[in-house]
Image: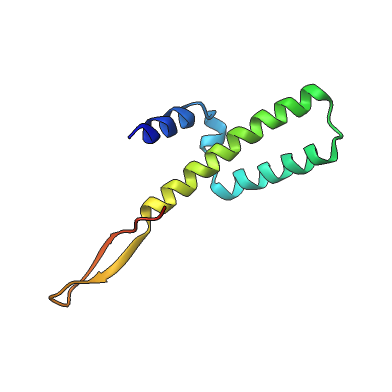
Length: 91
């Protein structure tokens, strides 16, 4: 339960423009930021700002993956032969 509250707190700090992004768009921007930081061409203040945005994008991507994981279902066949979907427990 404490982990859920920590996730909610981290997600509440994500700016609205990032929250609106798809996983793919956020990941692409994060990859671009990492590439720019690796090249070291940014001024220090710009690099710090990019790093901070990258951290928020990473949190957003993790939240999107968590949502997707929660939606995955497995199909099982009961003793009566009926198929049923149930949430998958992925750790």
